[in-house]
Length: 87
Image (cartoon, rainbow, N blue to C red; front, side, top):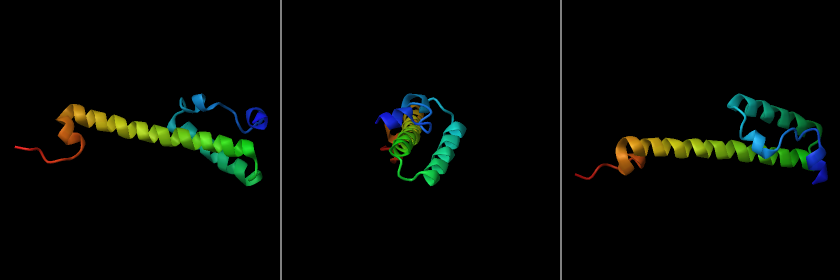
C-alpha cells in the first residue's frame, strides 16, 4: 500500500479524480494504459486503474440517475419509466 501512495503513477487521490472533466479523465485513462504497458504487474498502477474505473463508472451512473430525475420532473413517475399512461 505504501508503494501505491508514493508511486509516481498515482498522481491524485480518488477524490480529486471526481473533479476532473471528461477530457481530463480520458487523459488519465490514456496515461494509465501507457503505464500498464511499461509495468503490467505493478500494484500501484492496478490500484490507480481501479480508482479511475470506479470514478468513470460512478459518474456515468450519476448522469443516468440525473437524467431519470429530470424526466420525472417533466412528465411524472410514469414518464421516467417509459410506461404508457393509464387513462
